[in-house]
Image 1 (cartoon, rainbow, N blue to C red):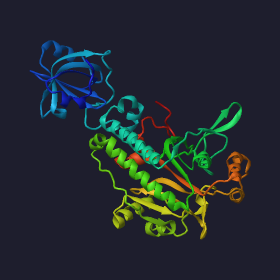
Image 2 (image 1 turned 30 degrees about the vertical axis):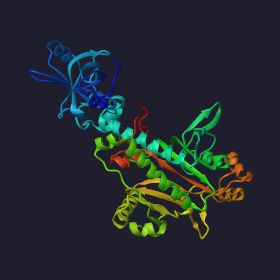
Image 3 (image 1 turned 180 degrees about the horizontal axis):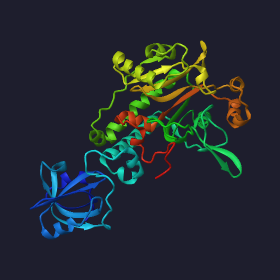
Image 4 (image 1 turned 135 degrees about the horizontal axis):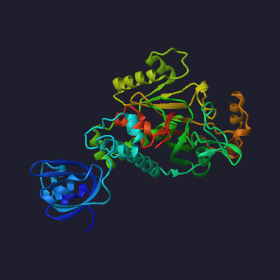
Length: 428
């Protein structure tokens, strides 16, 4: 008899079936016992009246893996409107040692550090696994949208010979006696691959050795990177980003509807045209000094509230960041060279995406590096490609964990990360 999942039980009323999963909960009443079995698709309720089966059930512990053969009976009060009766219950391993928190409760009451210390079991809780399902669905929507736009998925090195983002800290390592670094982003490589495919994207880990200890930063996170050629300026990139976000949210709705329902959240609508303000205007709206070189978290929150109040939008573009705060490969605004053809996208008052137009002429790269007092040699393999013809291009990068945290309302990005790596955590 082939095993079926809990979600398939409503179609099997009157049939004898075999399910398998984890003991989620036991309720031992005087005349009847209930066994709740959890599998990848949800919960199944098993009704036990036979004294021998009940005696065996009493010896089981929560999280023990079991197999149940029983008859499916309709019951509107049971999960999915059905329950299993006259069961045979067979353990598929030894009785489990219960984790240090109850997975059957609607919410995990353990502190986040305790959950992270015991991540392999904490992630079994429906609310934790739901966030990861939403993450997977968002990536599927990301890929589907870009595939439909003739983008090519690429895979670039995560060990590099020089830093990517000027000024950011890097993780150094020994590469057969030579200095090397974990990649801070696939930026250089995705730009070079525009010269091959014109439109590319990548899903992969990036590493930032920045000593942040906040609810929004990780030392390793998943970056959704996009780069496209033959753009007029950064506005073409922003249009692609808008469609990509809409595709990601459509993917969540299509593929993770049950997870969305489990968390009780609503999915935002991406406007046909996301509102945009120039950096100088953003400072005014946020009440920041006119000479402020960047937006602080409090400024981002104020801008998020403004976008919701003025435009009914959870999303807001801030364009024209000062060149002094952008990487050397950023294209300046031809009309205002002190400002960039770059942007950030705020999602509910939090920076989610950084992007913009890049330089594409070799001489401009030499000038940009010289202006910042940086030598060309560490970037030679990257910069040299621009001698051989590169189109005007640009791109962006979305932090996946930050996107999911904001989407689900998680207070800490670690709540939606399976095995986070940060300033303090290297295990499990």
